[in-house]
Length: 237
Image (cartoon, rainbow, N blue to C red; front, side, top):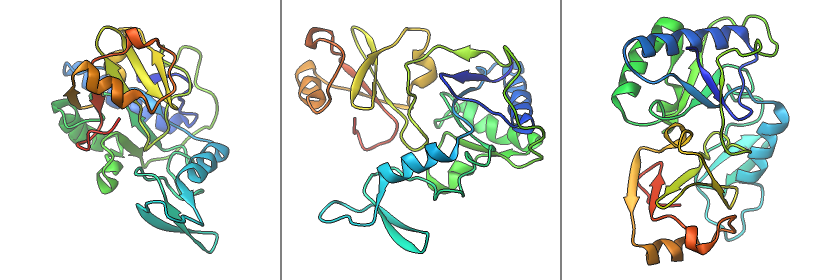
């Protein structure tokens, strides 16, 4: 099976698509799960939207996590997660993929992917900015166009997948849900392995209830989960 794509993710460059297909097939042959792309190619409008969500020219009293120059101006990052300067992201250049578990975490599959990826002109570019999930193809892009019908298959998942640097929080317990865009969205059990992070924090129901009060949600309080999956060591939801 070739690379799978979650939600609206895509690789319109045939070179990028073919390279990740080859890598995914090789991983599967060694007993690892097929690759699932959470965020692949990205249009300029999407990159700009993420930029304006993360960056500002006037931070005021808000916490600043970093700075970057764009259009001759110094921008301040007011979000803990990074974002590429518009027109520089390899997602925009149709080269990068943000991969789901287990290729987004410190796993045996990730270690093996690092080795096999080089054979396909792919590297773990995210190593340079603490993103386990970010992989980039450096070869010829080939033809640019929509993927062939059925090419690689797709994974059913909650709509509006998070962008690079803002992978969603998975919460589970009595049910399976994804915190995304400030909402709690139910997931099917088949999808959960593809969005799971690499650390799990277990909390008491009362603690978790207090935590999620910051989020508008689609689920009733009685359905709120008990386990919180986070993508790093900060313990944040």
